[in-house]
Image (cartoon, rainbow, N blue to C red):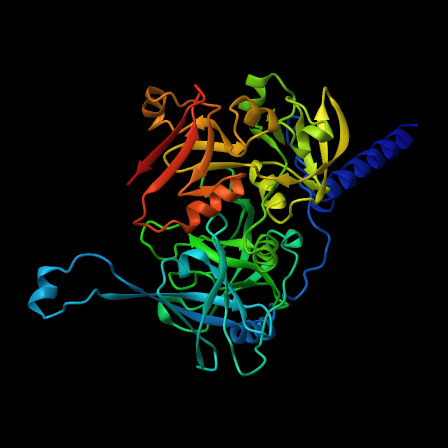
Length: 465
């Protein structure tokens, strides 16, 4: 019995020793670490698209087409200023000739050229040099200071290369573009960039709608082409934002749709036919929306509607919020004016508006702008039959707002809002178009002569020098 117990103890002891040796020398060691629960790591989305080799855009075809259609415009003007002492000492007895330069774009083979109004303004002589170094005299067909667009014509003895218009509404932010022109008289210069923004208003008056790019544009580029990678015209380079006068990263172009509409009006009517919606208002944002008590923070809030305008006839009301025009989103006023600027009187646009929380679409026919700012007087508009009848006048336009600077003068002489102007510089006036034409035809040295019927029904004449 004792032998059996001894054998069991020896066996147990041997097993324990064997297990202990395995634990120490054979089994892998593991460490016990005290941890505290941690939050799950944030999920960061990553792209599962394979990296593709970047292929740089090819600008060569677009550049070649545009360079041959962009011209160098030279504007020679004769200074009318007084001769200086230096002029007299040097024997000069005639006014000094001054020359400015810019660019232009040939838009058809017959020699029509589009440029900026400020490039050809106050010119006594214009010349155009093509990329093949041929030079021609140019005539001004017409211009529009409001959009800064002008149309020239040269008589060439050959069919000229030209660029075709693209739909600037379809141009996208981030799209590659080329600016072609003659900066600092460096002819046929091409620079590349992207569209940085659209519907940019530099004036702060909601009257402009530029395409903004980062293509390098400098003095001399004005009137030149902004083209896409297909060589199609999407804008006329017009301005830069700079504190030095040279390019610092921002350039602006009149959209091709606006430029095209302006020159088509000039060619067909001899002047620009500006169509209007007939509303006034402003862009919405959080601050403005809170003041107005509306929930929308994007769109155009309609503050007033012009009497007898297309907007009034279509049923647009004060308090409406314009969200889209022709399926194009409207975020700021320049979106609206840019789209309208490419339209003509009589064109119909579709407006999506928000009214009392519900959306509706209205069709608006653009009407002629029947108001005009008359120098020294103020804003005038076409007179209705009852307006003329009240003043016993057979013709005329009505003053609707006096110029702030001269309001006291006019009121002292019995002239106030509602007064009828019947004649400007001996030209009978029936509409604001007549008034605009009379002002345009007046020379800089000719006095402004106005004939009107005041609030007392008395006919008066005023001469302003």
